[in-house]
Structures are given as structure tokens and as C-alpha cells.
Amino acid sequence: MSQQRTGSPGNTPGTPDFPDIPEATVARLPEYLRALHSLAEAGHDTASSESLAVAAGVNSAKLRKDLSHLGSNGTRGVGYNVERLIGQIEHVLGLTTLRAVALVGVGNLGHALAGYSGFTTRGFHIAALFDADPTRVGERINNLVVRHIDELAAVVDTCRIAIGVIATPAHAAQGVADVLVNSGVTSILNFAPCVLSVPDGVDVRKVDLAVELQILSFHEHRKAALTGTVTL
Amino acid sequence: MSQQRTGSPGNTPGTPDFPDIPEATVARLPEYLRALHSLAEAGHDTASSESLAVAAGVNSAKLRKDLSHLGSNGTRGVGYNVERLIGQIEHVLGLTTLRAVALVGVGNLGHALAGYSGFTTRGFHIAALFDADPTRVGERINNLVVRHIDELAAVVDTCRIAIGVIATPAHAAQGVADVLVNSGVTSILNFAPCVLSVPDGVDVRKVDLAVELQILSFHEHRKAALTGTVTL
Image 1 (cartoon, rainbow over the protein chains, first blue to last red):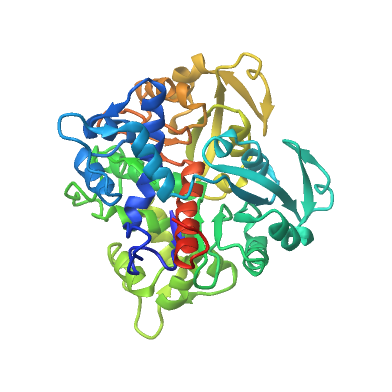
Image 2 (image 1 turned 60 degrees about the vertical axis):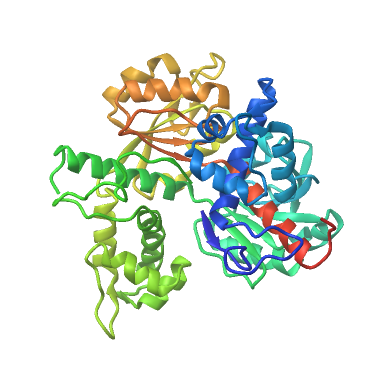
């Protein structure tokens, strides 16, 4: 879920050097990439748009349109070259270099994120952990020592942090975002249940786990209303 | 991010008993609700569409249109009644009753989810925990004992589980989804990095943490391309 998008490709003209890709397409590219890696592991050299669409959970017309933004149209009767398409998507997503991530807040959720192996295998490495709680500072998680938040600015610089992940309580999140932004970080993934205020040019994505459950709750409620099992 | 949406209000006609609300609006209602609760805690009885929009991180025209789907138009010069609007959104989202959640997979992420206080305060309670690993079964997390996955079907029935949360590795997720669906669960929140196949009438929301980072990576890459700090 995107909280704020500044300078998004949907709103600004593309450059000659960079494809102009709609935001919704960008959001689906990681799914295609995951599906392509699965197909490659299963020994497939090529994939039809239909099989790739099923693996990615979208319809094949949408997939073909999305991939056409990358200049990738497949070959009639053959489909897409799996390795070539992986390369194209990884290039556009900027995954050809490992990006360093700083994680702020090592409570329950932060602990889980710090130990999440899915990051490493998909283009990222957690380079530094921070917390404001002195009793947390010095704790070792996955071979990283938790540092005090006061060290954040210096570490962003020396570790060339590309993305900041905020897993603090809501009341602390804006302060952390300010420090990240002032240190030069321009991409933030926010797990705190609040809206961050950031300057133009900083991208924020927000993941709120309770929001996802509330959206499902709507559908549960609606299905119950349709079948008459609840009174409205 | 919605993986699959069957019987969604955007695609099917509404019923006389239930408002016909676009999917994108449904996804924003939890944000409005969170913002309204913050305003209520700060002592506000009314809120202008502008102040509510800022607190929810959307523009005010979109907010007014979204809320008009609930039949809530505010009062010119006064704004929205905060308590009344909270009631309306909670009603539509089906949050007036606490919904029971079963969490399957108590690895790193599952542990964090089981201990996440944000669920309880926002309409849900984790009623049961499951894992397939015999060394995990019997472990106590937040006053719940982890049960073996073989007990899932029976517990869904007795605990009236409304929503299943899957936090297993990707290879185990489809099997868990099948058990949940066969036990009568019609809403699933999937944290495993894979696409689930479910029958019509079952809603799946997917949260893939690495996908969020990959989308941010795209924007980092694009910003670097625009400023000429990388060669494409």
C-alpha cells in the first residue's frame, strides 16, 4: 500500500534513460519476478504469458500489457525467455546491486524483520539495527548488534543505507523518519500505524497489518450480509 | 495488496442491505478510521475533510468521495461528526464484533504477529496458533499454546475462526489454505511469498515484505537515473 508517492512515474514524464512505467505495473513487477524465479528453478527456459500469469496471480492480458512497458513482448508460440525477462525486471527494479537497509525498532515485529531470510535472497541486506531503548542497545540479532538511534545519521552515511525500515511504535515514527530523511535516505518502508510527513522526492510505502485484516473483515461482513446470516 | 478478490463489491451489484463500495475505497476506510480515532483521542468532536485527509494521508476530494459512499457528507462549515463517522466505518467494516483469527506458522514472523498488540485494539483477537513442527507444538506465546496443524479444522469450528493468517514458508502455504477453506474459513491473509489458489467466495489478501522493498528499490533506481548518479 503506497502512502505517499512523490515523483512517481505515473505523474511525471519519463526520461530517455528510464522507462516510464505506471505505478500499478511497478507494484506487480516483483510478483512476476518471483514467479519467473520459480519457473527457472523448475527448469523452464521459456514461459507463456498464460502460465506466467497463473503463477503471478494476475490475468494474462494485464501481464502482457505490463511487460510491454519493459519493451518485452515475448515470441508468438514460444512465450517469454525466462532468464532474459528476469534480467530485464531486475534491471528496472534496480536489483542488480544489493541494497543496504537500516531497520529502526527491534520490538516483536523488528525482531521478525531482522531475521527474515526473504530479504537477503531478493536483493536486500539488513546492514544496521537501531532502537531508542537502552536495554535493547547492544543486543545481537542475526550477527548484527543493535545500535542506539543517535548513531543513525552516521551509520546511514558509512553503510550507504538506501532504504530505512521503521518498525517503531506510532508515536516515535515521525522522529525516526525525520532523522532518516535528514541523513539522506529517500526511501522508507513504514510499519508504524501512522502517516509520515516527508519532503518531495522521498518515497514512503506503508504496511499496516491491522488494515489488511480490516479489509478482510469488510468482505466477511459483506458475505454474511449477502447470505443473510447477519442482520444489518 | 490484493491477490484475488472474488465477489468483490467493485464487480458485483450491491444488495439493498449493503452499500456498494469500490474496492479502493474499502482499502482506505481503515486509514480514515485510524485517523478518526487519533482525532477523538485528541478531544476533537468534529473534523473538516481537510484535517481528516491530512491525518489519513490522502487528498480531501478523494476522502469526501470515499465517505459519500457511506452516505456521510459532513456538514458545511462544521465538517464530519467524529464519533458518528467512526460508528459508520466500523459498521461497514464489520468491526462491531471482535473477529477471531487463527495464525498458522509460528516462526519469526508468526511470533511477531502473535504478539502484535495492534490486532486486539483494532477489532481482532488471535484465538489459536498452529504449526506443523512438533518441536513448536506446545510452546506458549502470549497465553496461547501452539497446536499441531492437524487440529486446525476442529479448532476453526469450535472457535468460530473468521480469518486465517498464513505465516508459513511458501511451500507449505497452499496446503494450509486448503485446510482453512475446507474448514469453512472464507478470508485469508497470506504472508507466504506465493500465490494461493482458492475457490470463488474466498478472499485472499497478500502481504509480501520483500515486494514492498523491491518497489522502493525501483524508485531509488529511478531517482538515481534522473540525477545521473548511475549509468543505465
